[in-house]
Structure formats: C-alpha cells, structure tokens
Length: 143
Image 1 (cartoon, rainbow, N blue to C red):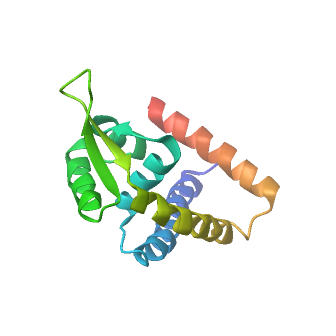
Image 2 (cartoon, rainbow, N blue to C red):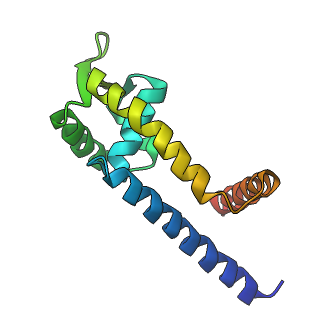
Image 3 (cartoon, rainbow, N blue to C red):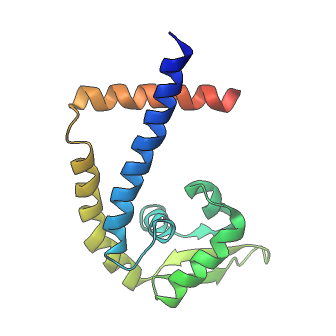
C-alpha cells in the first residue's frame, strides 16, 4: 500500500473521530455537562465508587484535571467525596442519588445517539471496525 493511502487513512480516522466526538458532545451539552463530566458520571454510575486518583486513568484525562471535574460535579450535587477509612491518602468519588437519577434518564438517550451514529454500518461492519481499530491502536502503543 502506498504511503499516501496510509496518510489518508490517518486523516479519515481523525476526522471521523472528531465528528463522532462533536455529535456526542452536542448531545451531552443538553444536560449541562461536558464530555469529561459525563465520562466521570458514567464511570461512577456503572462501576461504583472509585478512588479519585484512578478516575483519570480510566477515562483518559490528566490527573491534574480530575479534581476540577469532580469539584464541578460536586457543585451540581451529582458526585460526593469520601475519605478511605484505611488510607488517608485516598479519596473516593461516588455518584449521588441526584447523579444516579440523571444518568438513569440520560444514559439510555446517550446509547441511542451512539446507535444512531453507527446506523450506517451493519453489525458485521461494526465488528470489523472494532477489530481494525484495536489492531491499529495496539500497534501504535507498541511503537
């Protein structure tokens, strides 16, 4: 394959990812959340309380930003902090009842938006896309 085709694949991948991100960002903004806030809420909603120090790694944001995001979610009464009873260095973030109610409402709508984004692909094409993206991503990590 010519290098120009690989450069084209790179450009198409980045533009496609940006378009998907823009569509989901617009959808999430309806609920007065940004994508990072939504990602934190989604993690806590599905996985339960998490050490704040671990959240950044799990949702792929800088650890320096996570405190700010948790502060914002705490102000909105969607998240609460609690100290670890066995290790004073660790603080957990947990979803509040208000946060759970919000996610009960908006997560199914978010799933519908994701399904809508991928509607142009068959189930087999989605599986193939996942395989190809994993293959490229794993290889890129090894470089």
